[in-house]
Length: 214
Image 1 (tube, rainbow, N blue to C red):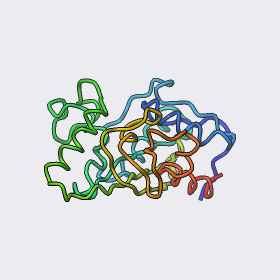
Image 2 (image 1 turned 120 degrees about the vertical axis):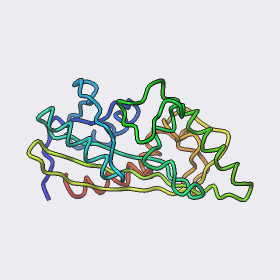
Image 3 (image 1 turned 180 degrees about the horizontal axis):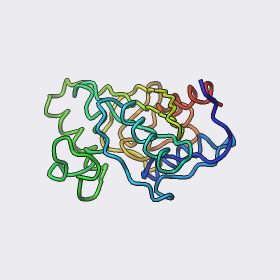
């Protein structure tokens, strides 16, 4: 397994919240993160069928174009009663359904991303199943670290919890305001970053990456 050396590392994402969270997790390890957006790198179409697939293709594209090691995260919310949807399509649920053709990649989606819309869709689909539908859910985070020579390493993390309505808190991003991790009373949207980083799916994946590569 290849070690990651201190220095510049591309965070292969245009999601400001995700880039900020990853940068905070990497901060203590001598890594100098720069986002794909800062380098004006395009977002590749996410055509994979798993979180690992999509993380790998994003990291590989950024490493090839930048000539630097690149780290990509693919993560999403999996709702038990919805057959683990939205899953790898979690970000796409933030667009109006008319803006997202079937199997569309990022370049084929038009309009503004709105996670209030995504959270509302989750609630509506659960309510359609009736009052007994389980609100159990989990977040998954897959990390792929790729070097310009083609070498890759992969890690996956998970956190279980339940969904609540209405959304609570404005400290997170994405689906954080409706997700209460197991054993806690606050949603991810209500937690201070340090508290969330200690228990999140992304933190779980990063602990595995740090132990293996740093």
